[in-house]
Image (cartoon, rainbow, N blue to C red; front, top):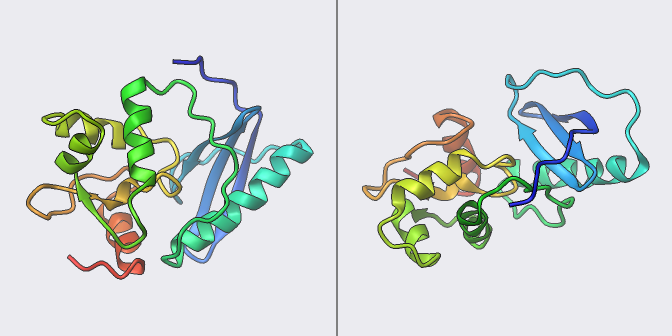
Length: 165
C-alpha cells in the first residue's frame, strides 16, 4: 500500500445533476464527492496537468450520468488502498455498463468467495464511485445494498443505465 499523496487542487465539476467536487493529487484524481458532500473551496490555481485531468473527469462523469461508459478517465490516485480494495475496484471496473453483480459474485470473481461483506466495505471505501462503478453491485437478494452516494444516487445511476429494480 502506497502512502496517500496530499491534495493539490480541489475543483468543482458542474453537471445537470448538481455540483460534484473533484480532489486531485500529483498522481491524479484522488476523490470525487457527490453534490451536497465535501463542500471544500475550489483551488484558485491548478497546474496544467490537473486542468487536463479535470477536463477528462468532467467528460467521464457526464457520460456516466447519461448511462454511457466513462470512456477515457484521468489517472486515478488510489494510493492508500489495501491490496484487497484494489482487487475489488479492478473487478468493479470490469462490470459492463447496465450490468450488475452481487457482492458475493464480486468476491468470487477476485478469488475470495465468502468475502461479500469485505467487498461491501471496499465499495464503501471507493474514493471515486462514479468512475469505479460500485453502484453496479447489489445485494444477493437483488436489493440495492449500500452506496456511498445514498440510495437515490444508486437508483439514478442504475436507471440511466436502463437497469430496473
